[in-house]
Image (tube, one colour):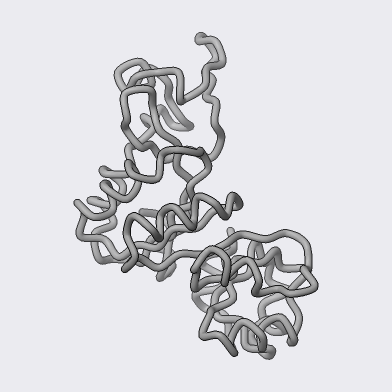
Length: 201
């Protein structure tokens, strides 16, 4: 919720799923704590996972809880980082009142989500600059191109816009912001939330 307080109009988060089918918000597939062994999220039930704590003794939250807390206060971009959990993610999103989109580095996940829930907005994550930068969008049926910031150029943005897609830069530090805006980049994903919220465009 701190990001929203700082002025973010959208939140990007990563999800995995427990062995008993609970989608949880966590960056990595494994968790660890000082007095507990490193464990994979997919190998634990939600009750066991609750023993692990994040910084400031915060429990690892479920996607359901996070979406409930955000509600309509910000748009939520959900990055799916584990395979075969698409139905679980879609169910959590459909049962919430939050406005969401789904994206992934695994473009097969994006395609699967779209087939399960055609109305949801989806995106593909890319690192390198492809010869055809929108080919993956077309193949996955996605609308958002999440492009690593150093590979974004005017041609890439123009080609995405030609097919009605948006370009979201990740992860963009302040020196990138003005050049990205000048070439028409649609969204900026950054850790510098307060600075971006007050940036003089």
